[in-house]
Amino acid sequence: MDLKGLRINSKRLRNSLEEMATIGATPNGGVQRLALSDEDKKARDLFVKWLKELDMGITIDDMGNIFGNRPGRNDSLSPVMSGSHIDSQPKGGRFDGILGVMGTLEALRTLHENKVVTERPIIIADWTNEEGSRFAPAMLGSGVWSGTLDRDWVYDRTDNNDKRFEDELTRIGYKGSEPSGKWPVHAYYEYHIEQGPVLEKEGKIIGAPKGILCLHWYDVYLEGEANQVGPTPMEGRHDALCAAAEMILKMNELPQRMGGDLVATVGEIQNYPNSRNIIPDKVHFTVDIRSWDDSHVLKAWELLRRDFDEIAGRRGCPIRIEETWQVRHASFDERLVKGILGIAKETGYSSLYMVSGAGHDASYMNRICPTAMIFVPSIGGRSHVEVENTRWEDCEAGANVLLQAILQSANEK
Ligand code: HGY
Ligand code: MN
Ligand code: MN
Image (cartoon, rainbow, N blue to C red; front, top):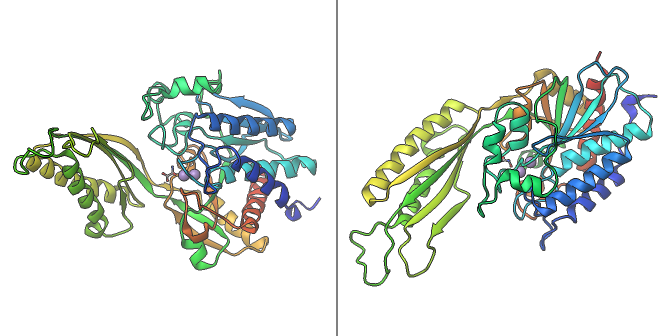
């Protein structure tokens, strides 16, 4: 059989994506499938059911990572892996993460129905808690599997309702018995929407990122002094929310001050007691800073940290900072990235060598084995929103390139 001519079944891929999009569907066409939620469980159950239909061996490890194993001709060889994540952002999109899991599933369905036997085994992965929205930081499942994060530290992470990661994992029935830990991998591919405007602007279909920016997450806690808003003079207030507001504007000026590709965002804030006629006395907010250059981010943070200390001192609002998460930038395997660009050309899709501003489990996989990603355009460059969208023909194109990339690597001796 001419394996190079093999193509996925785009209708079946679309049906799987549309069925998954009904799980946690939100009113404006998005999904909410927060990690370890009931919706995450439902989608996991459906994914496991579909894996069983392909007679795949299934492993669920004690981080809830789900692996489907497709044997090869020579199972003593290390496997090719491909996957992404099923969890979503709150009011997130129908493609982020799930496209990579369904794209890999569709590739395996295509191999199965064509009775293709590859030299190497192939493993499909659903990584737990990639988003880091409910349980911070992100990529906890692949973080423990790759040996980067400590399991017990992750187990004790709590969400904003003080629910523990481990308890929620147990509650949804996905705390597997298999200890989460890496094994040798021949190559890892992750198929994902770009989540930015570049492919659409350049009019290209397939993106082949050279790698992923470094990501630094910080949590900032401010203490003020609560009081009645009416009788308390402005002079001498210790208003934690005004201190936070000044800090957030300082953060927003940072990329301008630092130059380069730096991006910095405050995405989450809690204000206490959050009553309109009480001066706020407690504020927590998050800081996300990214760049290709790790030292650039560290310099930026040092600058910002000094600004924060000055503002906290001047306003009499003591500050506490947690350096929650740092993932260094990931440079993908040149050979695999070139392979993807070559496959795009052979399969007749335009392509672009680029960089990923979004974090992915591929960052951690890149520490274990040769890794590369395949991007397809996000309409309007939008993601992490209910209007997140990608053309079906682009979903098909990306899945075809993924199929050929998996075949290429899985038939390497
Ligand atoms: O933060 C990110 O880029 C990813 O969505 N976890
Ligand atoms: Mn994602
Ligand atoms: Mn995401």
